[in-house]
Image 1 (tube, protein in one colour):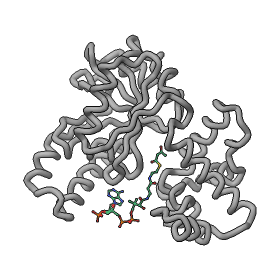
Image 2 (tube, helix red, strand yellow):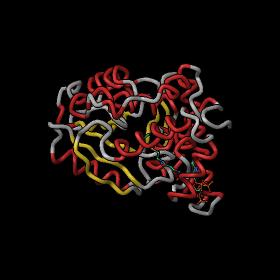
Image 3 (cartoon, helix red, strand yellow):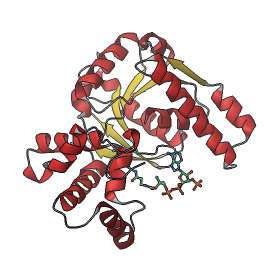
Image 4 (cartoon, protein in one colour):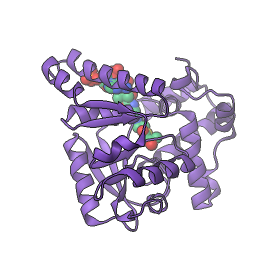
Amino acid sequence: MGCGIAEVCVASGLDVILSDVSANSLERGLEKVHAGIERQVSKGKISSTDAKSASAHLWGSITFDDFVACDMVIEAATEDVEIKERIIRELDKVVKAGALIASNTSSVSITALATKMSNPGRFIGMHFFNPVPVMSLVEIIRGIETTDATYEATMALATRVGKTPISVKNSPGFAVNRILIPMINEAIFVLQEGLASAPEIDAGMQLGANHPVGPLALADLIGLDTTLAIMEVLYRDFNDSKYRPAPLLREMVDAGRLGRKTGTGFHSY
Ligand code: CAA
């Protein structure tokens, strides 16, 4: 998702530093952002001159030190709370006074992540949706300490990058994933119980509920590991059995069938 966020930010004229865990994955990420910008050109949405100037505003880095120049850093690491906490702690050491840090977490408590900052008032949730260049929504989530100034600057940034922000209280899964991910989990139970095949379940929700894509295909797009991680947060934090992850979801993740990113999930790619 970081690549999608970087793409919409550079396309809006912002200077962007993309970061990743290794030089190789950073290189792949930068290529993905450039390819996304080229895609806009081929669709006639932006001119090649604008694409060139946008691409010139994109840099890559694998060290945290380069974030010293940033007004805002958006963390979009894998949905693992320990990894996110470590990144936030490291960022907090290097960013300039007054810089904001946002997390693109899809479920973890913003109030809890903010405690890793020396000034939790400068921390906020900025939750984008996949694929980021296409989906208009950003959920903006304030932690208990998030200041009005941080909130207003983040709302303004979301609008500047062409998204429609909605304000959601800090709660497991926020608003959209609290509704969407249990729906996907239920579709996996339906598959596990043999009520219908994966293509039939997806066709059912596309043709019978007008969803743009079926729930199992959507799980493949989101990533089955991410889907499971979100269900686990809902299950643990609400302590309610209605959020228990489907055993088949866990088995698919154990098998490394994570969806589009591994080539196999509920469908093959
Ligand atoms: N990057 C950029 N653009 C993309 C894209 C991508 N990865 N995938 C598709 N597009 C663009 C296409 O280029 C096309 O653009 P134009 O209309 O300008 O031609 C448009 O999106 C439609 O694409 P397609 O015609 O190829 O395919 P489609 O009609 O099946 O649409 C889709 C693809 C927009 C992704 C659609 O399937 C959809 O809306 N799916 C549901 C997505 C969704 O629910 N996302 C939320 C997931 S939950 C989440 O992200 C939160 C979380 O924390 C887990």
